[in-house]
Amino acid sequence: MFHDQYSDATIRAILDEVKTIAIVGASANPVRPSFFVLKYLIDKGYTVFPVNPGQAGKEILGRPCFASLGEVPGPVDMVDIFRASEAVPAIVEEALGLAPLPKVIWTQLGVVHEAAAMRAEEAGMQVIMNRCPKIEYGRLSGEIGWTGVNSRTISSKRPAMRGGFQHRGLRK
Image (cartoon, rainbow, N blue to C red; front, side):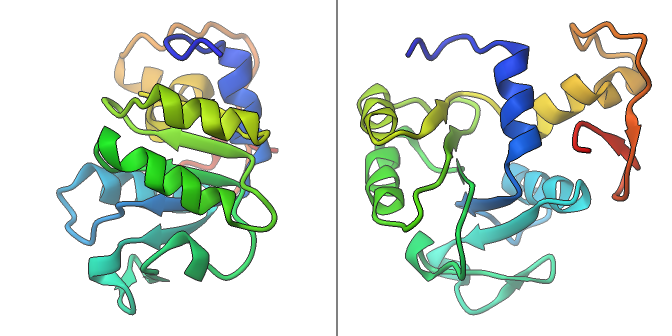
């Protein structure tokens, strides 16, 4: 698959479908982007598992932190990678060892590894690279437009009311 552009429909379908997310490289430091994304996704109603060997056994935002994907209790729909590009192949290999397999491998802004993406896709997973689920959720739900940012999304439909931090969003 071509990993430079993704349709809004593809991103929206992923964000609508996934329920559980493991964030590899989650940080307990409240000024780190991985902390913001973790908090945002929790507030949107996703079940989020922080994965960080240095924080294993501790909690981040009230969620237990795990040393590896294999320690996460239960199935994970999406693995969100907050690590350098060279760390992606090992994380994908670890994800391939999970049962059931995650549906999605998602890498954050600036994180790209084509060979690892091909390996994940060959196993049947979708891959999104060099994107942030927090930014994409905000853009597609219209939240980012509330502050005057051009979301590139025009709709006359009101966002669906739901529980969570903003009370409006993509999920039903």
